[in-house]
Amino acid sequence: CALPILDYDRLQFSDKETQLKYFPFHFDLAEKYHKPMYLHDRNTGGDFYKIVKENRHRFTTGVAHRFTGNEEELKQLLSLDLYIGVTGCSLKKKKNINVIKKIPLDKIMLETDCPYCEIKHFQDSYPYVKTKFPEVHANKYEKGKMVIDRNEPCKIVQVAEVVSAVMGVPIKELADIAYKNTLDMFGIKDERFSTNTVKEDKK
Image (cartoon, rainbow, N blue to C red):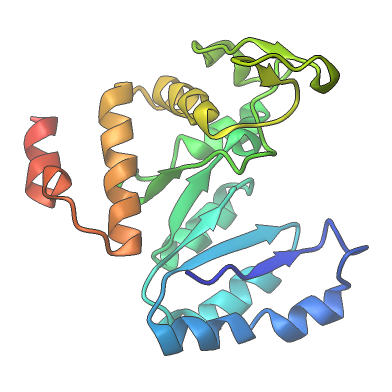
């Protein structure tokens, strides 16, 4: 799985010109090895969409991970037949939540993007979080407790809880769908989550 990044919020690490020069090379690898793409886009205007659209025929499938865009950007990504990755950063404000509601279930993926992008207590999505974990400061670490402000894989349950609530989809059904989408993107077979199985579960 190739991981191309186009990010204009962190230009201190790589300037725009350098990113635009090397971003397209990732499509060479995806095409050569027939791999899906784990795409990262942040504050790039139309550059990300333009480049991915030009190269969409070169890779099998992919996900726009950690999606934080508006409804028009969502439509653009869906027009490229990409999956949409949802993290805590995707659920910060009501306007973000309203966009997430519009993701088709067969295109949604759940992520944590740990150790970042946790759902913080001041976010508009936090009231939907049901599962809480005991946390301590790093200098007071205790076994069995998490470190404050460090996201962990287990917190994916919180992302699922929020998305389940705002979309009105039972969390088990949402988890099964997101899992199946992940398998499909990576080309992994699991008979428990074949297309027919998921359809039957919905009935």
